[in-house]
Amino acid sequence: MRLTSSLPMFQLLLLSVGLLLCIIVAMPLFVGKIEFTGDDYLLLNDSARGLWDIWTRPSGIDFVPVTITSLVLDTWFWGQNPKMFHLTNLIIYFFIGVTAYRFVQKVVSPPEKDLEATRLVNLVTGVAVFMMLLHPMNMESLASVAQRRELLYVLFGLLALCCYADAVRIGRHPGYAWLFVLLAQLSKETAIVIPALFLAIEVVAGNRADRSKKRWPVFAVGLLITLAIFIFQVKAVEHTGLIVVDAPSNVVTRLGGVVRTTNFILLKFLAPAGLTYDYDLPRPAALPPAGEWLLPIVVLAGIIWVALRRHWRSLALLSMPVVAIAPYLNILHFGQNIPGQMIFFDHYMLMPTMLASATFVALIFLLSQAVLKAALCAMIAVVLVYLFIDYYQVRFWQNRETLYSHLVEQSPRMPKGYFFLGRYYLEQNRYREARRVFTDLLSTKGWNPTFAEVYQHLGDACAFSGDYPNAEINYRRYLNIKKDDIKSLQNLSTLLIETGRCDEARLVLERLLRAYPGDYIGTYNMKRLTGDAGCKKR
Image (tube, rainbow, N blue to C red):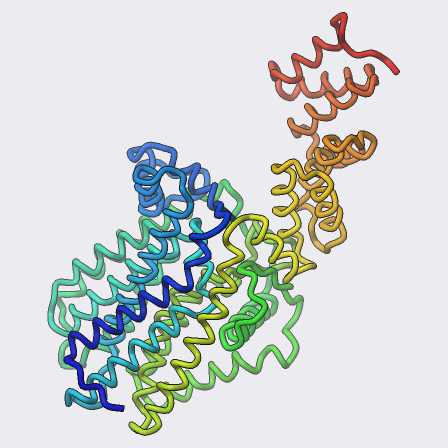
């Protein structure tokens, strides 16, 4: 393999190919019926606030003003056009690949210095980085507008790592790195891991003779600021219940949860089949079966072997993706989980995979040149396989129906897909389909209490399709769980009036107006009961 072009032109060619691959993967997001999906509306609603409010006050979800500001800018330029939001995601996604390429070049030294070897090294680095970038588990980060936070966190995080590597290698001021840490932290809370990655870079890119004392005062100040922002972010979302530990646990159950999650991650990473973007994993009450320990033990044994050999730079490279994935290993029970379940999302993998590209390239460089070329061909083949898988995966993110139908198909025992698909059908006035999907949800395990609202939605679907008896049953079921739910009380009172059950309607309305004095629908329905054209007993 002879690479004869000049180095700058060769790198430009690599970037052009990488951009083309990203465009091919993202094409389904720009053709056909395209909608906002998943949690997009939560962030879009938040972006309706003014910039001052966004930067000075947490939303009802969290405090990520950089992310919300990027969505505000999209809205200013393009309006609520999902295709243009996807275009912004695509641009950020591509530059994540470019930044990861530069990061790998800074922390992994090529084995040879001649021009021909450098070209081969650049090719291997580029293919490895885009192989990781195009891993199918990263498609959620590309295709979901709600994961703009993940994209910005990873982009600014990688820029911070590049700047810090320059501070260690060539003495550039580390303040630039901490500026990007600040932007990353204000994009997503898990950017709190970046200072730990800086310590790994001290080992990877530095040397014992140069442990510059000038960096440490800046490091201390930057760390304190980052921690202060992180603590504020945690406090801002406590009232949502997302970070409240919901059950007592012990060392065994926590270790079991970490092992099961790690095994799941490694399996999906090595064999990315049956991806749905959202997974519920059973939390083990005891240590998991032996089969779930195999892959985690292999990885741990490799890390221990490198440590025993005192290959500190290799150990630091190995530690970086581990540090990035650590917040997502289900060490704690969180309040949003279905009881007895742990959660994992595909977008968690974007930062770990990009950091793993450096580890992978370092391992590849240990091969002889002949084997290196064979490995390069294998990596190109993997990229092409990923390209087909990615295109297939991204198609499901075109709109809510395709996404949630895919989730139901791939995870028929998980209630979440049924819940969101049923709500979509309800919004589209497809009541029969909504009833079918909501009824299927009730046959899954662990749906209550997390998805108890299904009773209200099923009641609406029954009422709009003319099945008043079942509508009443479902409204009352939900009111047994949430006694003062305003919508169920409103709808039930209206249903009872329409069916001529005036006395029962009065009791429901009195209950509604006690809980919500002055409620418009309650007041209106009470007037209907007393008016001439009001409730007619049947």
